[in-house]
Amino acid sequence: MPVADHTSAVTPHGTSKLHSGAIKNPLIAILKVAVMAQLAPLVVPALKKHTATVIWAHGLGDSAFNDLAQQQDQPGIYKSRDYFHSLIKAEVDKGIPSSRIVLGGFSQGGSISIFAGLTSPFPLAGIFGLSSYLLLGNTLPSLLTPEIRAANSSTPIFMGHGDVDPLVKLEWGQETAKTLKGLGWKVDFNVYRNLAHSADPQEMDDLEKWLGDRLPTQG
Image (cartoon, rainbow, N blue to C red; front, side, top):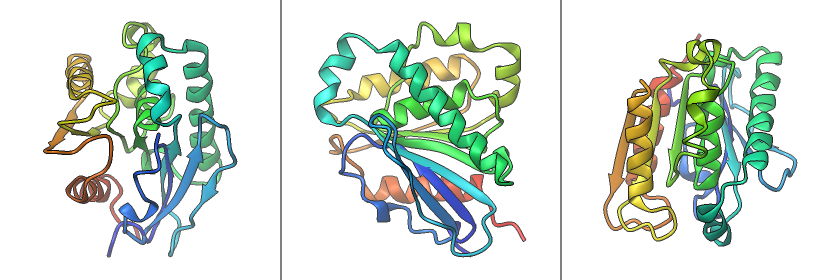
């Protein structure tokens, strides 16, 4: 049975280049969230009994990268993190165990997802970032209290990155993976040849398989 039949999803992405049909599993209900713009979430319900959620949100888009590379907006990042945490709590309040929730996205949506996932008080099934990088890397260790570390210290992380990405440099993704591994996380980092700041069919297949492993069918 495909993963999408039982799952609902919230996914962040920064441009429109990653289409909604990329994850084909009918067990997953997809909730797309325009996080940066604070737009109302779009929820795609699971086709069968809802037992898991994937969180996927929109980001700022290509034009914002120059500003972010120069100066990261710490208050804005914290606000987006808190918003993601509220989405996770809302799913938990509906009866979905946080261990059946995956948080992730593309571009800056993925970057916020990584930051929010690592600092989540809820233990998650997984975190993923496509064409993403670590926000507030110098600040992150101070936010990892024993309680926070205990919640997600074993949460697996999937990262995908194009080797010719002109906006989020491959080196940023590689350094993110290196930093997270150094902090004790298991990171599955994948590089896709001749891919710019966009998605790749092989990347989507790899992500779907990873999601299936994180959110196996129940019942």
